[in-house]
Image (tube, rainbow, N blue to C red; front, top):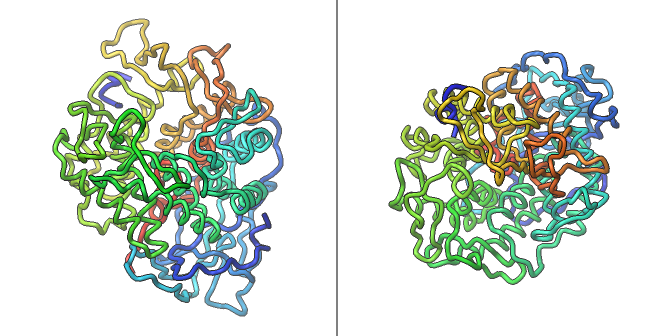
Amino acid sequence: MGEPWKSLTNKPLDEQKTEPEIPGLKLANPAVLPAPQKAEANRGDYPQLSPQKPPKPPHVRRGPSNLQIKPPRRDAGPRTRHDTSSVGQEPVHAAQNEKTEKSVISWRGAVIETDQSTEPPSSKIKEPEKPSSVEAEDQKEPVPINDRQLAVIEAFRHAWKGYKEFSWGHDELKPLSKSYSEWFGLGLTLIDALDTMWILGLKEEFEEARKWVANDLVFDKNVDVNLFESTIRILGGLLSTYHLSGDSLFLEKAKDIGNRLMPAFKTPSKIPYSDVNIGRGTAHPPRWTSDSTVAEVTSIQLEFRELSRLTGDEKFQKAVDEVMKHVHTLSGKNDGLVPMFINTNSGQFTHLGVYTLGARADSYYEYLLKQWIQGGKKENDPFGNLTENHTISSIYPVSDVSDHLVCFLPGTLALGAHNGLTADHMQLAEALIETCYQMYAQVETGLSPEIVHFNLHAEKGHKDVEIKPADRHNLLRPETVESLFYMYRFTGDKKYQDWGWEILQNFNKYTRVPTGGYTSINNVQNPSNPEPRDKMESFFLGETLKYMFLLFSDDIDLINLDKYVFNTEAHPLPIWVPA
């Protein structure tokens, strides 16, 4: 690697009755994918799955740039997005209603129409408008699921089997003890996994999860939740699933939890408290401090902004925009880098002089870029000189230690370069992702620890990556796979798919529990006994496996990055298009 410190730091959806309209709601964004279909039954246990032959180059033929994807009409009937029983031979379906509605065509069960804008929120609540439609001259050819994607589906189903049998409706699976743990008591794993099931085409699993959301997900309960975690996992997951499915159940639930989180912003400084009691409508800082972490208060913006856009209620966006504008005015930054903590009473940074790209600050940088993208790049440098080179160029390692969370950065830099920021960021992203990969490749199990130290002075017999005993656990985190997805999507270099495939194989080898589920492990350096921790984090289904599936896909329109932006929990939200 050379000098690593320089290179890192309930009913089938087609049978549902039409949902009642929500008064005053503008359904501003259409669904992007048709109703998911049941994937092929088990193709044997995972060890029998072998790496696929190199897939064909990504298919880039597109229709007119103004085409938008809308939910299927009720009379269009169900369509199969991926027929996994005959990989490589999926037919292109013509619109069944072509004779009666000549201006509409079908693409994978979706209706393609033009000029449906996703507008920024307005103070006036608008009624849904009748969409216009035009004939399309061309139709996109389906991209079949490949063997590596099938392996991800199999892994998801194995994880879901454990969750369904031993922890259904609870927050997290404990796969070894065949039980569960609760954090908020809101079914975090289930909600986090909703859009993953949709994207993977798991119709049966999605429908049973929807039934639980409809019948059992209740937010009117006396429980404290973390504002950040409930926003990115629950609010983000519900909004994303609404957009993908077009099912207003998820939007109604999103509005409910969004309103219940608003008391967090009732502070002297408008910097939100970290914890909210969603039943009592009260909020407070952690028991041990009046500080919030900078990442937590600046990584909820995508979700609340989108909730305002969908509902026409400006209060959600106003609250989170005030946070960003306030943070932008503060002193204590170092060439664009911010401290880790901010006080909810004074509104000032605390613990000055300590900077990190990892926990407590990481997603601040991610959301600077993504808010700008979400707004269609129309907001003129609103939150901290985002488009100036020094802000993002200054985000690089300044020490010989890095935690796995920092591996979100290559993907963020690549996303910025793709959206017109300096091209140098792509070169940095390529170097950073190489280092993140080595955090896996140089470890005995092929799985990264939580934290690594880099050997700054190359010595014979010493690895570039060194691991301390307290840091050698692996929590099934997604950050490296996330960045691999972005890198492959933007470069087409298949080594990134191969690296992801290695990681998936090692997850199966060292973290898979035979009775269902996957577990975090305590020791990535001991292949004979990785010391399972008996916990499957919700983000393994919500993020890690989702990014795996997308990484292995050669379909650039499967969550097109020019139409969607992922929140920090891998829930895709639409990019706003001006009217």
